[in-house]
Structures are given as C-alpha cells and as structure tokens.
Image 1: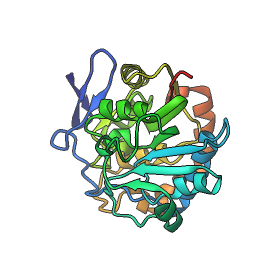
Image 2: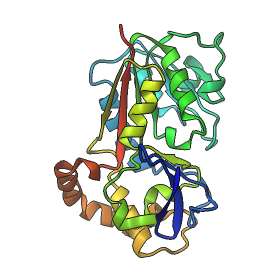
Image 3: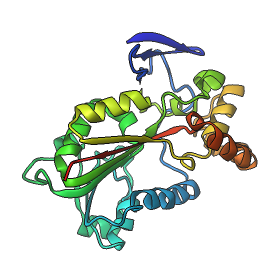
Image 4: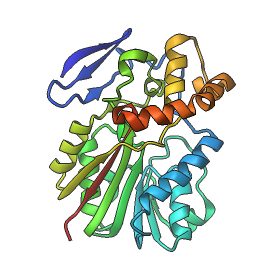
Length: 273
C-alpha cells in the first residue's frame, strides 16, 4: 500500500490492484458521525431493484444475507417461497421484520462468527451482501465463509462501492462514500475479483449496475462544492435530492456510455455444480 491523496484526505492504495483502505484519522468523515440508516423512499426503490437483480435466474430455495438490517430483502425472498437466514451484528439497531424474525434463522453476529452447528457448510443456494464489504475488517474471511455456506451450483452476490469510480478525480474527498465513518475500504474490479477467486469460488464476474445508487453523483457534488457541517448527512437536504432528480437523465446517459461512471460493483461468484 502507498499513500494516495484525495483532496485533503489520504487513503492507502494498493499499487497492484488499486484497492483503497481508509482510516478516519487520515480521511475523516467530517460531516456525519454515524452510519447511514437509510432514506425510506430511496431504500424502497433500491430494494425492488436489488431483489429483481438477485432473482433474475429464478427464486432460490434458500438464501443467506450478510448484514440483513431490517430484514426487508429477506422478507421478499420469504414471500417468494424461499427459506431465509442471515447474520448481522445489529450495527444500526434496527427493528427486524416480524415474519423474518419469526421464521428465519437469524444470527446476531458477523458471518465469520456463525458456528458450523448453527449453519453447516453447503447449506444454502444463494448468499449475498448489499453494501456490506466496505464495512468489513476482514473481507477475505467473509468471502471464504460465504463460499463455505453454498451448495454445489450456488451463487454469491455482493454489491459494494466502486473504488475505481471514474468521478473520483473531480469530487476528490467530497466523495459521498467517505461521509459514512464506517466505510473502511473500497474495492476495485480487480481487487474484488482477485479476493473472490482466492476465497475458492470457481466462477467470478464483476458487473457495474446502471441503476444502483442514483443519488451518488449529486451527493458527491454537493459535498465537494459545499464542504460544510451536515450532522445528518448530505441526503437530509432537499436541495441534494432535487439536484439528483433533475440530473437523473444525464446520469443514466453518462453511465450507459461510460461504465466506470457507475458507482457500484456487483460481484457474482459461483460454486461449481
């Protein structure tokens, strides 16, 4: 790792794969002192899009979610007929959906702490984590444990911010992803695919979804142009949401033309049948 200056912040950057690591001392969140709890409207739209992405090949019989939060996505799978399980250390202290809590196999810990007797190897068809890996201290272990959970032919899906996002040179440390103090690392396509292969997956694909995090550019721009104190975060401002809505057609066109302007990486990793 080498120091990499991003505006007034300094991150560690791998000279081989571009992977970024962040300490709050060298790259402070500045404007927000808590993890993002989510905006109900945005989260509802993202939930629908994410579920549609995950079931593109059909609803699996069993799923495991790393970082299930309120259990809203697990509820979609449960309603679709799948058995559900998940692990979450309850960082945000959110209330879990009643039916998921009642019928799911939930573990109040990280996936690496789920014991084999509670969830044996080869137990599920699909495992996934939505914007989780950027918070994890040991993502290699997380991916290895995920691989162990999957049955032959099973798949893992992880969405995480793109540390090789093409807009970083413009917004610098106004980058919205630095607003969350619990974001401690950012993957590139190369670092994410390398780690997945090292974890033992037989097939690895990196996608860049067009529709994930549609407010990303507007939020980053506002933070870069007006780096003022915002205890509740930049999305608490109506002006940020208005800017994102007005710029949506241009955002979609730019992302269609330049894939690296899409701010999210989607890892699809499979186990051989």
